[in-house]
Amino acid sequence: MSVLSKLANVDSRVFYWILFIALMVPFLSPIGFPITIAENTRELYEGITEDEVNEGDVWIMNFGYGVSAWPECHPSVTVCTKALFREGAKIIFMGPHYDVELTYNKIHDTVREDFANKVYGEDYVFLGYITGGESAIAQLASNIRSVYPTDHFGTPLDQIPMMQGVNTHEDIAGVLSSDTGDYGVHFMTQWQAAYGSKLAEIGIAMNGSTDLPRWQAGNYFGLSIGSRGGAELEILIGELGEATTAMDSISVSHLLLIFAVILGNIGMVVQRRSS
Amino acid sequence: MSQILRREAIYALTGLVTVLMLLEYFFWPTAQPWAETIRTWAIIVFNISLGLGAIRLLMQQSMNVQKRRENWQYSAMLLSLFVVMLLTGFAGYFATGLQTSNGIYNWLFINIYTPLGATLYPITGFYIFSAAYRAFRARNVDAALMLIAGCFVMLKNAPVGEAIWIGFATIGNWFQFTGQIPGMRTFSIVGALGLIAYGFRALMGKERGFYAGGE
Image (tube, rainbow over the protein chains, first blue to last red):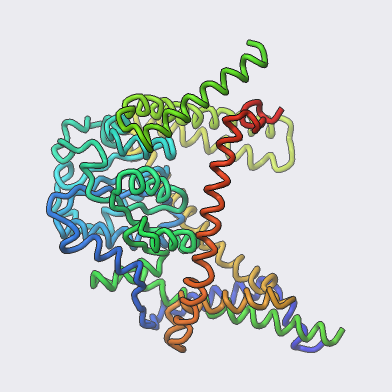
């Protein structure tokens, strides 16, 4: 068996080690490949800044992702939270994922400076975990208090200054849904399609192909896809963070993946010819 | 209740709810209070199902341990961790008055669950890498075309692609916006039409599984 034909049957563990070592390099010594901004990301950023947001507008930030998707979704959510706060908007944090509290605590870490100038109950509120799937999202549009009589800490919504007069989709300026599954679509069918609410999606890279048609069709005014979207938003706001750092690793891993595919195919062709 | 009556009752209930929801969504916004009530019931049923799911899970896993079925050790681990989380949750609540925010429960979550959760997802990258090497083989023209398109889209998504050659982004975008997005739109539209057809069939009583648990 020639060396080339052996390429078709390299042990998996060899690839694991190659990938592990290759991913270490950019973290130890960042390369800094230039990143261009996709149109869907730019539209998301423009939709939550300047003239698109008025001071005092109430926005919903939906945490539909868990700890495992933090690297993909959280950088974008961080930038969007910063942008909304800096425009003077108020934010309702909530989520259908059981990790919602952990994510809420994390956003306090990653947006620490902006939270320092904001007051709980006046500038932002945390409603917590929601169950009930699409029915609950539909119900939120017509009566927030029927789903959340209190915030996460047990305070009745009527006693929270920011929530005075906020109870239906009409009182919400926009929704940013960050999720790994269906919640962007639930908001699309129950809020955007039904009432024309402003909606954007922050999704994982794997869902990019299903989310892009919805952005193109105008259901989402903007769309951030995976950590690449997060890196693009970090560039737009001018504060580079963990997504930009991760981009070098993504470059290396993608190159290695293509290299592995080419290697496997060379091995296959040589094996076929020799047999 | 006889089988027929049971089936008729489900027909009637499903039909009533469907018609009300359709009317409220498309034609009759004043029906909102009724629709809201039904949605609240749905949310309550959803929450009850979570509790039922937990009970069912415990019963199934307990049985695995009791009968020493294959991999029963994992079931034992699940049961013990379930008890630990439940007890720490209650202990933290009684000690501090806080629910999931209490320190004891949070400590377990932050120091055990969070690192495990964060590790689980990236590990798949290693499997994808190995699987790509083994499975992405250009065995015929169709597979070769898919591979080439996939490589261009990958090089478009990774910043290194544009650094090597700006054309990778252009070609990757062409594949995505000319090939993939129209395909996804077709899937979405066909799926939605299928869902409507399924809804009608269910309402007409032609989807037996919907009413009688597959009987």
